[in-house]
Length: 266
Image (tube, rainbow, N blue to C red; front, side, top):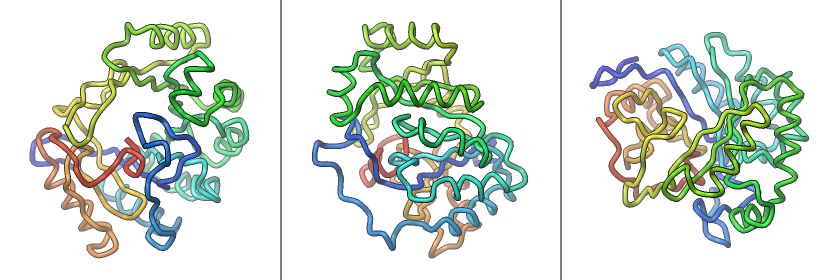
């Protein structure tokens, strides 16, 4: 699929839940966010059918996000179902890593190929402050489990205020070098003001070469993270919603006043 600016769209990010077991300061308020009703969340069968349609239309890269995808009940079953779809060349997940120790080996058996793990500091106390609920040792165990299970490459997503020269970012960079992990530095974003930049070590935020569309957990196809445009798969059907999202994908991001990182998946 090509959009109106001749960008090849081959990447689908799927938010499988708006729920998370952490409360990161740049993602949600201390009390959390208003959660979607259970009946509004896409079922596994719906997600799989939408994914099959997307793959038939040219998608070959799929990433599961959240919220935190590993808190979705039965997530291994969903990974298995998506892993069986012919045509997916790159199947990955973005996770905070706190539950990977429990699920890493099952994810590999189900067909997941690799993971991106969020880690903004190596300091236990600072990690607790950033996530409000988290224990950094859970993440370290998760990284170790991911490595032993064969998830590769393991990429670390590190959110920074302004640059990768900040003390916490440098510590994460050192940790990644010592543990043979790839690191990506992501400047803190703001959906409402349209504040974003190109990911250091990755290609997110590079509008000129953007190849992605997003499926929210309540069934909306988003052509751009920083746009209010969305197309409902339940009312339009998956094929039409995907086609409209691609056709209406903006040349660059502006702002998003209707969604939050917690229910888009970043």
